[in-house]
Image (cartoon, rainbow, N blue to C red; front, top):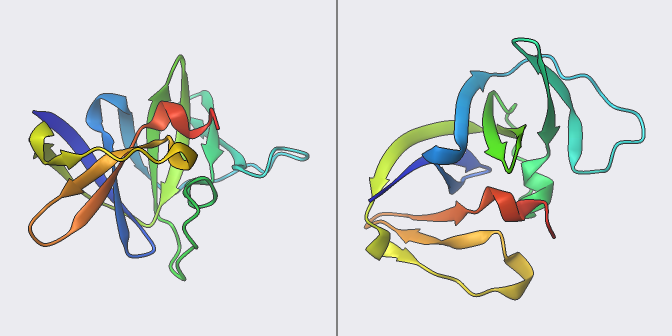
Length: 133
């Protein structure tokens, strides 16, 4: 069994393994960084830790929804923490690994697979591969 956190970006649902999730926070003040790469939205200060905030919409190529992104998921990536802003955090689910359909899409190595629930499809993201493209 695998546990995942499901979140929404513009009506699409994505998931990351809970093992990678350090915390889920409400929106906070973002400090813009001049000359930062396009996928870095800025920096946030979480209890004294300065964490880069990634533009997950840009990285996943999902257009932004009209709504404000109100949740920040703090993820552990290799040895550092990063944040992503999402439209909303939906739920934490236990997933049978058997229902994860692996996808071999060379372009999108960060997609670990698709979780096929009866009523919806959730894309499982491998957060470590997201930035190595």
